Image 1 (cartoon, rainbow, N blue to C red):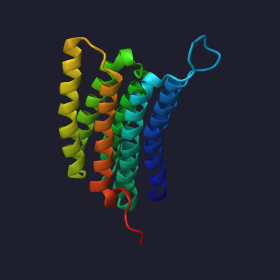
Image 2: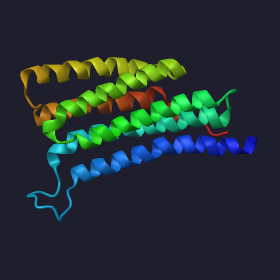
Image 3: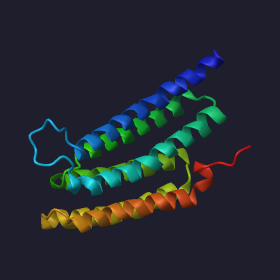
Image 4: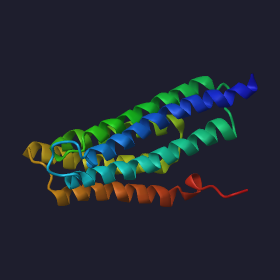
Length: 195
């Protein structure tokens, strides 16, 4: 039965991969309209900050999920492996679902839902990272960026204003900085040395 284990691991890994793929598909569909729709524009440029935010989050999240899965379940299988695998998979599918929610809230009038979902994603990821004892920089980045984003969202929410395009790009800039720092600080995790 030992050779059936990779199939079980692949099943759980594929679950969150499929949901993330759906989220990316939906994000691009929200950004680029179908020509058949009776709309005045083909590309929704006002959704660019949301699209960039989603992309700059999904890349390190998916890369980190993949590397974590390899390290924990393929390179060295824990014993027992079933419960940790199920917990990790439930969290990863939940995070993927949050990405899908973000992909459906890219219009500027839905900015509250979009950035609230980003904050929820960072909180869930931090709780999981604490449970899984993953690289500490993930929690540090989430705990630093999360409150900054939350303060900005609550401020604009209380003012009952839609963030201007420059402010939306500032929010996106925070996510870009988070992703760059993540890759710089965890380079060896993301890109291990060849053997």
